[in-house]
Amino acid sequence: MIRLRELYFIRHAESELNTQGKFSGLLDCDITEKGKEQINALKNYIKPENIDVTYTSPLKRAYQTALAVSDNPIIVNDLHEMNFGDIDGEQILKVKELYPDIFEKLDNPELDFRFPNGESKSDILNRTRAVIKDILNRNDCQKIAIVCHTIVIMSCISDILTNSASLLWRLEFANCSVTKVKLFDDKAVLSYLNRSAQ
Image 1: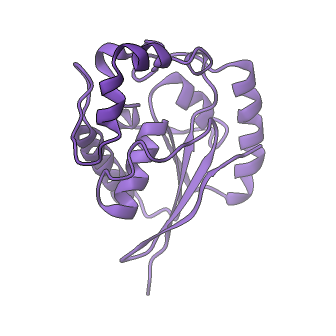
Image 2: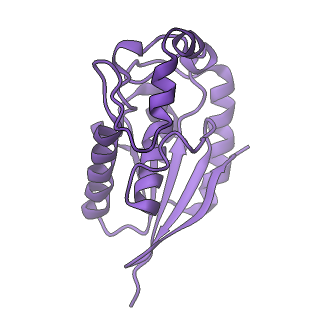
């Protein structure tokens, strides 16, 4: 008999640093008023899915979002956002202007770019690969919500679908969007990507 597991990847609601156009990585910040509205919409959207268990990044913006899915989300430390190192907290546009090579290197699928004093593509891939394996081994639940961050979701989807980091920096996930993947015994199927809960 074929076993089906359904993973619902949910990006956190809009955060204060999102509105400021900054790399937020490991910086902890609250969600905005708009983010609170997104969470209410997510609660209504996700309820009919009857999620069995919810895992979340320890960062506030993800945990606050996870409470829309479950009263008792389970914190998994390795679901935190990518460590952007020295550019964490910096304006994205300013970094593009001062260090254009960073974005050129990020866009090269052949290059394992590392942020200065931060994580590399292979670091994030290995971390997310291990955390998804751990989550799947923790329980036999069919419907699993994972509330985290855009690069983490990007890495998970890339690994599940291509067994590589080839889709890193090639996917986009809006705040509070839901991406669903069905896992069968020997294959994965992307049901939908970056679906708005509003």
